[in-house]
Image 1 (cartoon, rainbow, N blue to C red):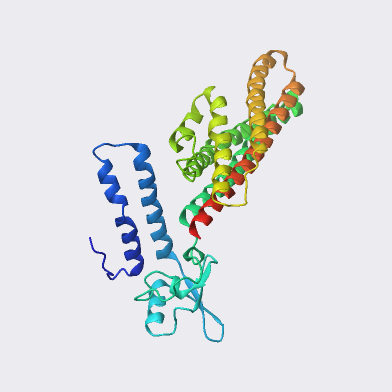
Image 2 (image 1 turned 30 degrees about the horizontal axis):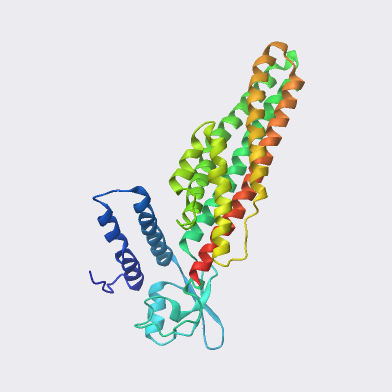
Length: 336
């Protein structure tokens, strides 16, 4: 189907061209013999195209006039009007409201033809949508993770300290601390849905960046099998350690100098195992301690458990940041 430049402008035409190249045809071809692993990259491409279109429709631009003065911001419509009046030319320096720089001739559809053959990579005038998705997921994983861990730590410490401060005549204050701490733990537990969701989607997207001839498993298996109890301890070596190794192989084959630190995984796995074990010991000891009423022992176990959990979260964040940076390096190399 021929794409025409309708009143929605060149941005809409660009998005439609991307959608019409091969993706819908591929979905229809696979429709009679559905296979998730064959269709998943196609559907992902469609999501990226929609996100790409959204970025362009919301983006504003700055341009530099003949005296090198920065003008703007201007919308897409205003930018086209300036180009039609000759105020903006193909070699006019441009900058987006997200800080990306380039020249006007790199903006698809702004001119009837593309007068700038290759001044810079087109990705310099706007960032790769997949890179933005990965960056955004990691940012929100970190933010919600800090909120979750802080709420749980504050709540459990409040409950633990209340036992030490409690005296028989201060039962009202003791109950207040217990309830307040319990609410903080409950809020932290509820908020934990957000960082888990972010890291799960991020893990899937990171595996999608590994070429299929290198990946030892599929993104779907790598992600879902991590949720099987006990089996997950084995699968972490395939899904997380394997992601680090396959990412490094991909980076090496593409000639990218960056490498993910392989030693971080072993540290993370050890801390995660100790953290899970400490939580099990804490729950068992709390049940036994309810009879002996040893408040100090319970507080010590709480501090050990919380400390291990905090260090595990920080180490896991460092690990995924390293993998995330590797994936973005791959995407940037593809855009050059």
